[in-house]
Length: 258
Image (cartoon, rainbow, N blue to C red; front, top):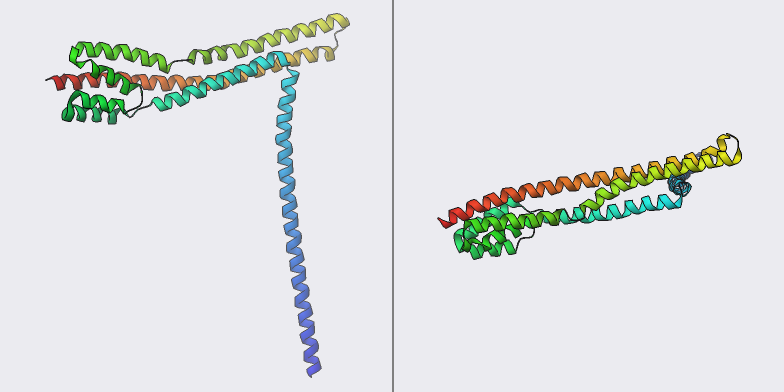
C-alpha cells in the first residue's frame, strides 16, 4: 500500500513538473517570439526611416547640387530669420492690462517718476512707448502724444526687422525651382538633338531634374510661407496692443494733469 502511494506521489510530481516545464517553455517561446517580432518591427521601421532619408538624399542629388543647394540655402536662411523673429516677438509680448494698471497706480501714488520706474522694469515695446510719453509730460500732453507716436513708429520698425528677407526667400525658392525646370528641359532637348532619335530614356533624365527642382522649390516656399504668416499675424497683434495702450496712456496723463 505504501509502495502504491509512493508510485502515485512520484507520478504526480512528474506530471506536475512536466506541466510546469511545458508552460515555462511555452511562455519562453512566446516571449522570444514577441521580442523577435518587436525587433523585426523596429528593424523594419528603422529601414523605412533610413529609406526615406536615403531617398530624400538621392532625390536631392538627382535634382542637381547647383540649384538644389541654393534652394536648400534659402530654406536654412529663411528658417533662421523666422525663428529669430518668433523668439523676439514672443519676448516683446506684454500684458498690457497689467502694465496699464501698474502705471495708473504708480501715477496715483508716486507721480510720473514712479510710473517711469515701472516702465523701466518692464520689457517690451509698449513699456518703452509708455516711458517716452511719460518722459515728455513736463512739456505738455501734445508733446507726450507726439513722442508716443514717433517712438511707436520706431518700435514697429524693430518688430518688422528682417521680415522682408523671409518674403524674398519665399519668392526666390520657387523661381530657382522653375529655372531648374527650364534648364532640365533644355538638357533633355540637347540629348535628343545629339542622339537624333526621340528615345524616352534620353528625355527622362532631364525631365526628372526639372520636376525635382520645382518640387523642392515649392516645398521650401510653402514652409517659409507658414512661418511668414505667423510672424505677420504676431506683429499685427502687438501693433494693435501698442495703439490701444497709447490711447489709454494719453487718457491717464490727462486725468493725472487734472
